[in-house]
Length: 81
Image (cartoon, rainbow, N blue to C red):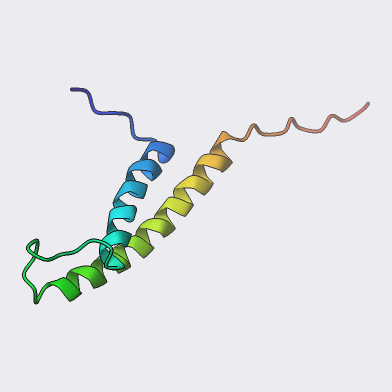
């Protein structure tokens, strides 16, 4: 199986999936019962909230980079003799 090419758009897509999972865990939408020890759950939720914040920041930067790099530069101005 061949690995897909990672450019800023596809990286933002895959990171978006991870951030969605982190947000669900951090907000408590996903139960951690029987997944991690009960004493770990608050720490896992806190880390997921922090990682979701960092991930959305990186996704914003990747999207901005993709938009800026896809723009066609304007032609240089012409000087009349």
